Length: 132
Image (cartoon, rainbow, N blue to C red; front, side, top):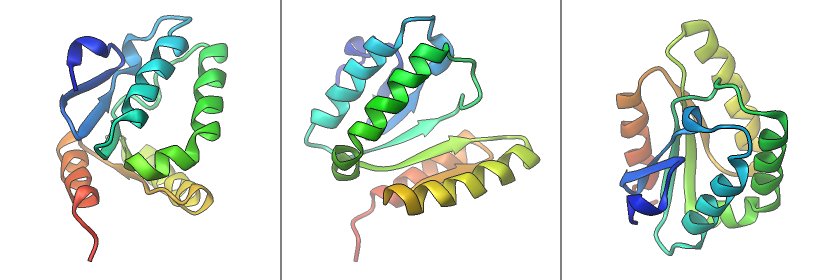
């Protein structure tokens, strides 16, 4: 992966991919979707770490991003070993962990929440380990 091809995803630690939604200005969803297409089209599996889950995203951008994820969930299950949210706030972490459990059941893809980026990286490495 070439980082120069990505603005909203840090792929320097691939297969650990760190979302950078905080950098998104209104209208960024099209570029975000193109980057997700590049990730989903790559043969190598990855884990998505989202440290800025609560960042404000314009309604139309969020809608386009959710539509892409929903419409491409089957592809994501093939290439993405999981999504990990980073929530340092203990009450926010508990809430996000409960939501993540529901999303895992609904989509058949691991969704997790942890308190720190270091914990997210460790969890990502665990998710990338071969099963068995």
